Every structure is written in C-alpha cells, then in structure tokens.
Amino acid sequence: MADEKDDVLGTTYHRGPVILRGPMIPEKTTTTNLLEPEADTDWLHMDPWRVLRIQAEFVDGFGALAELGPAVTVFGSARTPRTDPMYRAARHVGRKLAEAGVAVITGGGPGIMEAANCGAARAGGKSVGLGIELPHEQDINKWVNLGMTFRYFFVRKTMFVKYSRGAIIFPGGFGTLDEAFELLTLVQTHKVARTPVVLFGTEYWRGLMDWLEGTVLGEGNISPLDPELMVVTDDEDEAVRVALSELRR
Image 1 (spheres, rainbow, N blue to C red):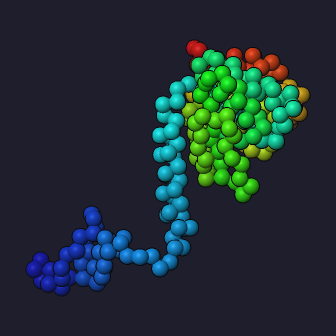
Image 2 (image 1 turned 180 degrees about the horizontal axis):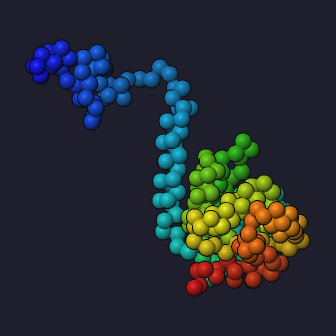
Image 3 (image 1 turned 135 degrees about the vertical axis):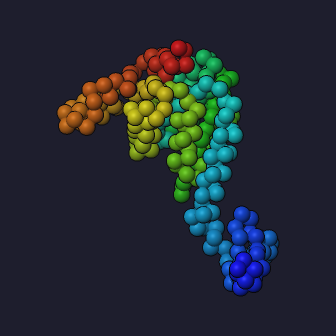
C-alpha cells in the first residue's frame, strides 16, 4: 500500500523542513528564486519586508547602546530657542548628569535636546542622540557623540526606556507628551522597574497636574498614588538628584 501511494504522489521534494510531492513541487528552487533579478520591487513596501527593517532597527539600537552604562533621558521641545531660560536649564542638567558619570540620552534634535547634549558633551560625558526620520528632517545636533536615526517611533521609544534609569521632561509638545505618558504608563503598570520622572517647569506643567489630580483622579481613572510617579520642580539640581535616585540606591 505504501509503494502504491509513493507511485501516485511521485518524487519527494524537500524545501527546508517542508516536504512537497506531486503538483506541490515548485518549478524553481529557493536558491533560483533568490538569485533571479527582480522585475517588480513592490516587495520593498510590503509588511514582511517592514518586519525585517523593524527587526534590524532593534538589533542596531541594542548593539549601539548595550554598553552605554547608566543613563538618564532628557525629553523636551525641539522648538526651544537658545535664548530661552529652559535651554540654559537643560544645558545645566546635561552637564550635571555627565559630571555624575551618567550618560545623557535625548532625541538628538535642536532645542531642549541640543541643550542637554551640549551640557553633557562639554563636560566630557556620553552625549547620546536618538533621532527620528521625519518629512522635514532634522539632523542630529553637533553635540551628540553617539547618535542613531530611527525610522519607527516605537523602536526609538523602546531605546529611551530600556537604556535609561530616570527621565527629566522639559516643556514640549505632542512628541514630548507622548514620550512622557508612554514612560509613565510603563512605570504605572510595572512593565519597567520604577523610574523616577521629573517634570521641569512648574508653571508649564501646572495645568496638566491640576487636570490629573482633579478631573482624571476625580473620575477614578487613576489612583491617588499615580500623581506621585512624577516630581515637578524648577530646580535643576533637584531634577538631577531625583533622576539619579534609583541609580544611587
């Protein structure tokens, strides 16, 4: 009976771990398909290829940052001018972190990011910039001594969270808020170890904190302990001290 079945199905073809017989046997081998010139490049824009690019970004990011050592991330607006007091404060924070032997990670752009990178680099520290590909592309600022540009926001945010043990968040817009709430959500849900989060600039963040402690807490959408995940301050040295608190335990 087995021999009769073999006669019906014909030759067995092995494609990796897959067995093919009869009409299922392909006309071309996997190697032939690999080496043939491509008449159509639509595959470059299809999801399977995107998965490989995403995987490559994770591999490159992990490889670049794995030996960075202790680090604190500084978030904030790319639009902050160099004449703004917040720019000076971010530069001071970058310098103090570097003097403490801690790497400074930013989004690598201008504004607050440039200021923190400048402070760290001038102090001889590790100044990291993790940029993002945007339609109106911003180069990695000149104060970064370890930089990488990402295609995907979620890969970039993974690097921010994985390689830092504290965060100082300066005034910023949608991008800064997105990064802040992503980190707070991970801390709140215990997806990451407790990470001290500093909101720098009491006047800027007052409206947000009033809303969280009033409306959001009042509606029962957060617990009374959740606002304590953040420290709000105008003192650069306090911001650094809080951001480093988990590293110094």
